[in-house]
Length: 593
Image (tube, rainbow, N blue to C red):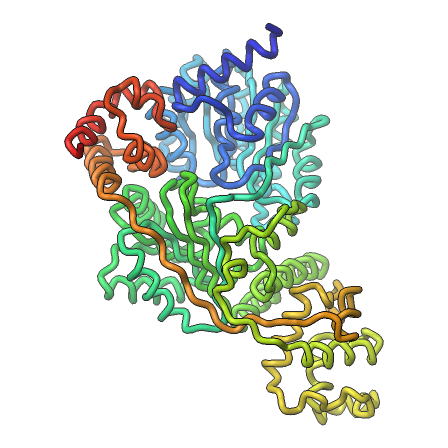
């Protein structure tokens, strides 16, 4: 057995002992091998794909301290709680601690009491912290949510730029591993450059989350849909994202009046209020959380069964990461986006008000268009998302709202031909608004001054509303028949696929209505195991999912182990958790039988 193979066997033994899993997930083994070999690494793994194990296992195999840079206090707290629950020595240093507590934890870290130390990126600028880290050997610096280091990412945070200066002050630079769930090739390249990674191995395990079912519900009464959905999914854990604080407050008040166990989370609340609400959600005391995107990275709850976006997000990176908070335990979950034209105006307004550079705004407009195209497309939704991140799905997913045809298709081929012909006749020189005005037969001065009223397509769609014309244009963009150019004043350009439409060889369809399928109800034993988990959660003061995720409870209910040895074969049941909780769950299963 080679030295490398021996290390892998040690890693597998730790995986089984602490986490209760027999094998690594796709990509984990390759990343771990690379880190153990001392090479910098970039890991692009979907939410729930097991990124934390990729740096926690190597940290356990080193006789030195490893640092994890994490963006949010809540994430640090959750991770340390999970590690503590399986017997791994870890701690965090953040702004919730007193100076005395910080000094004590730094001293304990120097003395080798911890294997993992979680810190916010701002901490790397603290002289006492830097001095402490210069006095110990660091085995690894793991950067979580690494897309935050890139200005082209969807959640750029300037504090992440302090990571490289910190590394450069260490006499013996450790291995650096950067992890994120959503990053385009442009962002991956920026991560590598901003962290000054040394010939890193980039491992992309795939963006596909097979257990997530995606739906887009256009042009409906959003509030009415939400109330119907929650009524049909009572007791399930879910998140509702809204674009503004005002909308969050409105939905929170409405759902509270309807008797739901609901919380809210946005930047206008105090730190204590946000922390308390999040903790109650983590402990299943609240079933539903209504939040702005400030809650996007702050949740590590595994049993979220649905994520509903009440408003369209600003880009697909944000959407996929926020939607990915659902189903982290691997069980089926729903990701639903409620969409109407007002959402586009809100996001454009936010970009305009950003006071950023014209290049950045143009980049954001381009991303927003891709998000709008997702909402309009008739293609498989999951294929669309994966294609955006540079990945192909071999066949349509078969589970999204488009694949399941949970909408009516209206043939708009004639309208499409009129629009495409107009774009062709103006030599692709104008944008959406101008093309709409020409087709509508507008008397605007700029049309008269340019002589556009003499075009054969002028007034061709005078009986259609401006909204209907624009919607059809958006469908043509979303389905790839046209493209908007970049820049401050984007113009419409025909794509090669438009030829088939103009020649009458290709039909064009538009989504008009959507209905939502119901979700099957869980079994009685599963619900009793959930109730037991909640009792233990309240007794021990840890969130329920720290004890066991829903997927483990579901497997327990299905397999019904008769003794502790059989229970150890269940995914998610490690030796430490078996010792702590095994007897209680085994008793509950036996009583049910």
